[in-house]
Each structure stands twice: as structure tokens, then as C-alpha cells.
Length: 132
Image (cartoon, rainbow, N blue to C red; front, side, top):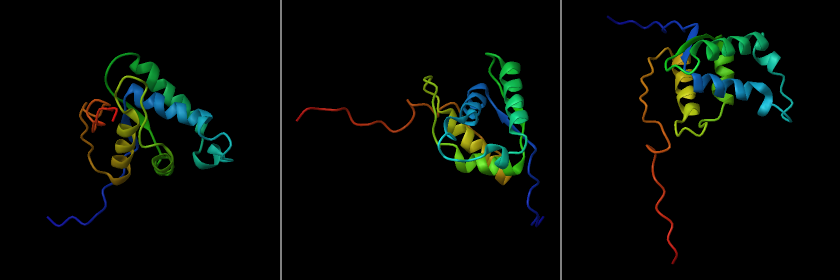
């Protein structure tokens, strides 16, 4: 079947606890201070959006799994362009990378298949430092 239609965008993005914390940390103003950006202008009802993020964090607690966060397309586009491509909490897992990949999947309508190998240990290794 020749289906030329663009797939419908989802209204939810499934994020785990580390990704939700990463998102909230950035929305809390750490990257907006001094940039002169009004997050309320970019993301409608950003306070309510942060409450949804914290509802997900509380719901997940320390359990593994994902929380279906309600997300608007405009906010997803801004977050995809604005969030850094990498972010770690010290666990070795790059939740910034998985968050960006999930945002990309949300925006393109493509299924995102991520494994747990996106850690500091799975990336390319720097050669050991030697004194010459």
C-alpha cells in the first residue's frame, strides 16, 4: 500500500525518571538565566508542564520504567533544539542523549528503540594518557 500520509504526532512522550529530572533541571532556569528568554512565551503553561514532570517523577519513584508525559508539538520542537545532546547524573547513563532521541521520535512519528548501552562506558574510549 502506498501510504503517503505523514504519521500523526503523539501527544505523549515516554520518559524515565532520569530523563524527567534532566528536563526539569533545564526548565528550572539553569540554562535560561542570562539568555533573556521567556520560557512562558515558548512553552505555554510551563508551570503546569513542570507540575506534570514532577507528577511523573513522583509516580515512578525509584522504580524503573517510563512515564507518559503530555507534550505539545511546539514545546517538543523547542526542547529538541534547546536541550544539550548529552547529560549525565553521575550514573554513567546518558539520559540527555536518550531524551533527545525520544524527542526526535516524538517529532518524526518514528518508533524509538533505545537500549541500556548509552553509558559512559559504551562510548568511544580515549586512549590512555602516557608520558613521552
